[in-house]
Length: 340
Image 1: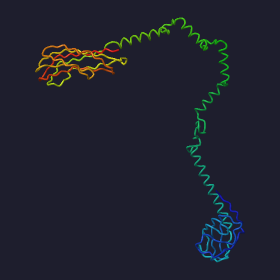
Image 2 (image 1 turned 60 degrees about the horizontal axis):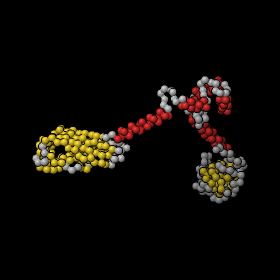
Image 3 (image 1 turned 90 degrees about the vertical axis):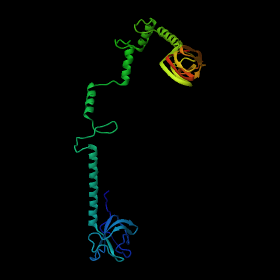
Image 4 (image 1 turned 45 degrees about the vertical axis):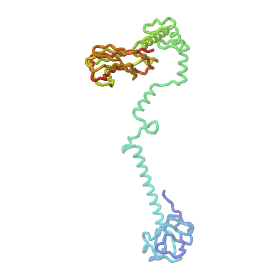
């Protein structure tokens, strides 16, 4: 900010003590009428000791933040005796004030140039920023076209005027062929349903109820049907007393079943064996009693077993031959699940 020095041209005082050539705080007899910053000269009448100083501050009867030996001094900063004259330098002071004003103006111009660049986003004054919902600016060509379009329409109705027009339209019985009152729509729907719904492609409430009942009955029937799965293997071999799975199935179950009974059936031909072949069924990991068999074709059925159902039931046919090796051909395995 530019300054204005209020010290008068006639300000003059004396040193209140010996001043060496390095001191930056200078005691004087009086600072009355002096403002800072300011220019003073010590020993102005002695060409050999004349020293110009710039005072940065004033504290009581002392000059502070003093810049010593400024341009024009006889020999730079030097020592001065007590009582040496200290006098104002008005011409230098006024020029310093003017330079301060100029520097402030230069700063203002720089700030204006920066604001101009930021606002116009370019060097062309035509590059005005367009307004947005949150930032002020200039109207775009597209917005001006919209404004002109609205202006050409003329007068607009208020919300109250529109509501009054709708009310009057309905009160007149709605003579418009395209629109219907809410009451008209409700009455038409009631009449349509009361007539038994003669419209092709639509169902009455009674029709929908009958359809729902039929779907429920069909679902019950489907859930009551038995589920089955089968497996076929042309040839299996093994040896020893460890039971070997020769056929297996998994039967998916309806979610509605709370109980399931499983029965298993098998047919196979024993080609070779050393001793007796034992066969058993494995249902949900639970084995039936084994059935001893010799060579030839066999039909084997396991008694039904009832389980709490999961999502599916697994069943398998297993055989062993404690006497040694065995060989089965044409193995057919069937599991049937019945639930409720």
